[in-house]
Length: 376
Image (cartoon, rainbow, N blue to C red; front, side, top):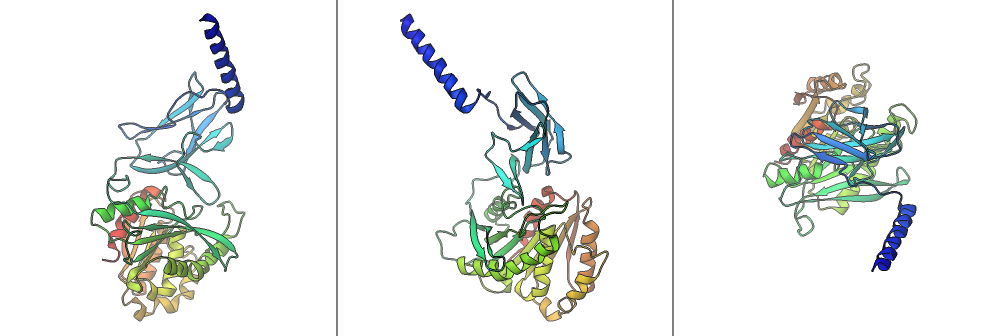
């Protein structure tokens, strides 16, 4: 018996050594993201040989990039933040200068040039996945002839779309600078928000199209394709590729009364560039945390669109023009000047100045308030 036990132990040790050689040393069992009862978030990462580890986030209030974490005796680094409002939050770790995703979290969110790990704080009737009929979000790849490349967009279809034959109104929902077509359905929770609003009878079932507003790599520090070039290329792609694709592939209702468009930040500027020259195509448009970029320094946009702004016949059938921006947002004055410009040209604008700044904390709320106003 002793001999058998010794052989078994030796075998286990050999297997353990082989496993460590193939997969690395044993990692302690731990939760990388944990929500407390007080809606605080605890973040952890196992990095036993690291000298310094920090947490970064573009979404968690007051955090920014570089919150220092503390190490325990098993090599697990930890930090507690919050309390944090219900919603989704992108984050990453920096380990000795190298920025990485959370290796123990399979939930992520893509931006224009990188990916983020994704943490959810529960406790919201709007942002939590509920036991209600659920729609679906699909990734669609298409070839853009105008850009000579393959591109991608996300499409939300409401509960029952796949098994039914009904047609639906369509809502084009645009993201901001540095994000991607993945952003609204991950960190933005767009599909979940629509599911919950539709189930509560607060919004009409609709198809929501979330395209990629960038046509190349983008950086606020320069590099990549110039911003204004990308802005115009997307508008062309929207008209020549995206709209025909959606109208051919999905059961969308025809006519202006069944089309809406809205966007945040850069997507809000895209919305204005698409909707104003084509008012007879959209009965609803919304601008979140945005406006006409540079309107406080120049009237070029106004001059270029003067004919469309003055076209009273195009305003007939325009059901909603909706703006919202946080009072701490760096684009608050841009939003106000854009609203004033539209009002001076005879547009009836719903304007909301909210708390907060240029963050997903506001944009999720804006979507939840804007979507119920559509197609009623």
